[in-house]
Length: 315
Image (tube, rainbow, N blue to C red; front, side, top):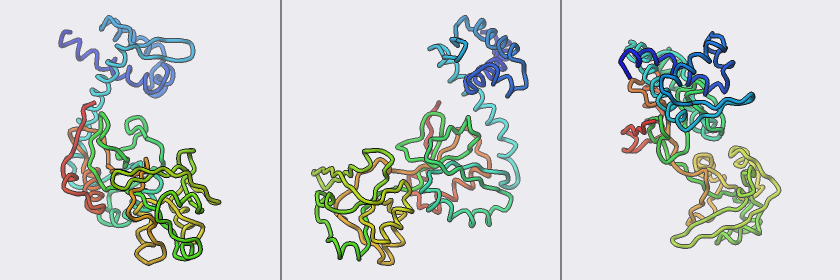
């Protein structure tokens, strides 16, 4: 491809990426302020330039070809690079300023991140924060979200990240409940207790445990089920049974003696345990408003030595 062709293809690549993200030519045209026919011509020009079919068109939907998948990845890289250049405006600003939109899971958002925000806003008076509290996996690029706190082993492709905290789960009950019903000494005994569990999926009532090389799965039941850890915590405090809780949710009540840990020697295995990361687009330049938020979260949530290093995975 000639150098002029590379420059000429940039708008075509940008429009191609927008069409895929929008799901149709007409939707992309509305977003870009173009006519559908102009969008169609730009896509046709890119396909002719590459001599490849990128999109299979039907009356109802668009489908990427194998070549289209590869072209989309390259086009998104180009847009990310353009975003990095535009971010220079903020990267060299005198002070952090502007709005930060952060996606955060419900329990972590309510009980871990939200309590920190008053101090952050006090420290950085020119930065505003919008928490997008949802357990859904948010697409940072498509939904204009700049940071996401997510449980993961490593940043997914196209994102950079820093580990914030390890989230473990435990079983807790009130002293009154345990006095009345007894304290289990083995997971199998949970089948005879009232248990408070998530309840979003049938698997949520099958609690799994590990002690050394021993694994144990127990089907539990209970009269109160709630898909919010704060509600399960309150249920446990009210003596409704033995609750599965993230450690951060139970910590204060345990310290005050309002709850006791049940089966402390057993590891409570759950899909909701692991490392919480703060993730962000892997642009070369991170605006000051994002950098101060990332550093603040790492400092407040006790990021370990690993948290001082940024891990990146190319798209």
